Amino acid sequence: MGLEAVHALTGVMADHNATTGVLVTTSWFGRASEQFAQRNRITLINGAELKHLIKKHLNIDVIPGTTPPRQAKPSSNRQSGRPGPVV
Figure 1 (cartoon, helix red, strand yellow):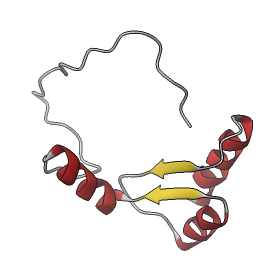
Figure 2 (cartoon, one colour; figure 1 turned 90 degrees about the horizontal axis):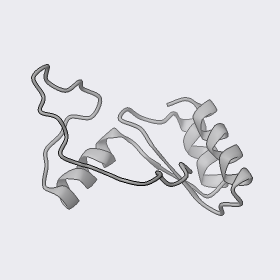
Figure 3 (cartoon, rainbow, N blue to C red; figure 1 turned 90 degrees about the vertical axis):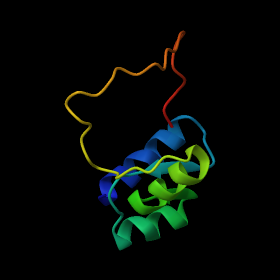
């Protein structure tokens, strides 16, 4: 993931007076992104770490970055109300 996304998160953090941020990707981050994030209290989670966290906490094996099967069942996750802010 490019440095632009990490820079954008820094702007959102400033706008919401957030002291830390988390950016997740199904791919990977470049070295410049990692260095910038470290200096700005941003945690980066790449595809391999995301896969590990999903397996650890949900006990589901996934392959980040792939598309769902064509005959995928609709989600049974029904949410009501307004979603919270994306930070």
